Length: 425
Picture 1 (cartoon, rainbow, N blue to C red):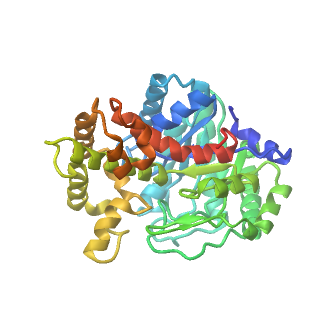
Picture 2: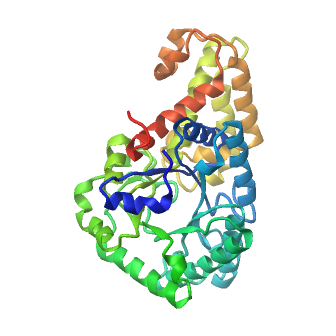
Picture 3: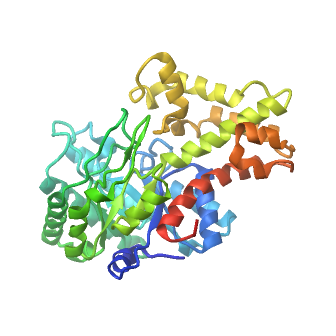
């Protein structure tokens, strides 16, 4: 079913908590799986890009907001997913990519980025100016954060009026886990204190009004808080609803808001359902989707190694290992331990930093070779039982490898859609 983001708070107040899955990935196969599901179920497809991933200078994907929007639109057209079901969001939009520069320089680029997002059709905007820039504290006080957020909101409002279309809805607040998950084994994560959540809303409301943005603030639909969930390289902290009774009370006093939950990866349907019921109807997921995509790719790599005589011994795995060793920037500061430990983390860490490498020409060539090797082949059931037991229904028929990959991503998305009330499990 189609859900408008501005309806989430009302539905919760009426005792009909309904959620939306926020797909935070730029991988075309992940996007295809999400858009295909949207078409099949006539449900909202919320796709978000982060400030580091996509910005007016290209981000680490090399895509501007217009490029990313065009990619999503292209895949949506191929999947016959109606455009009215697709919502684009910008996550952590603020000075974060340029925080090594003086604040005014970083904010000038943040303004250009926000304008580029809105002009490209992004209408869910998470304003995040909480991080300190050069010669500032790592985390800024609420007042400074709110003033910078209002400055960016003013740019978004002007850009929306200039480019036409619906006005943006906003998400405020920044108390979230580290982007991409923690680097160490975790034991517990404390939820946001109710008083801190109330303060964030109060200060942002006052600052927006002082800036002449009262009407824009009426479109602030979400507050990012920490619900006590997280994942690291090795493990997952699962949701414990007993810890957030006080935090939930904030929503009773602030009926225009819902909570937005970041880093909900690997939580599973039970925890995700509880989050939606407790006021966290916007569930953000990213690394889990590329983790299971890699899982399927490596499973097919093993099957091809056993089935196709001239394919070789796990050439996809070998290509990704060589690529990550040659370009360690995206993992070397996050994976620690012996050389053996770092080797398995490069491929199997829950933070899935291998996702930064799939867009490279070397990785794409290796994936293409794998798919070409298996396309049209009939894979015997015992090979699926050995390497991908859950995919056994693909056995004994001409194989389309891309369909196996999309199926695996869809299995994880199904947990989210079930929790959000879109499908039944």
